[in-house]
Length: 66
Image (cartoon, rainbow, N blue to C red; front, side, top):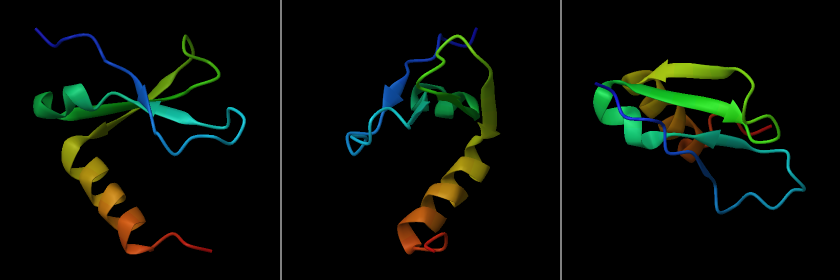
């Protein structure tokens, strides 16, 4: 049985609510759900753990900087 998502918002989120929340507690189960913090009952995007890890590594490396 997969546990319920434990939603968290980045501590860097201070831009007036334009944020996403992630549930990293599900990563050991192979998935990382993401949702819009302004619509907590709305849809979620679900990424497999390796894809999410690659995305985070790319962000940290500056791959998505404008």
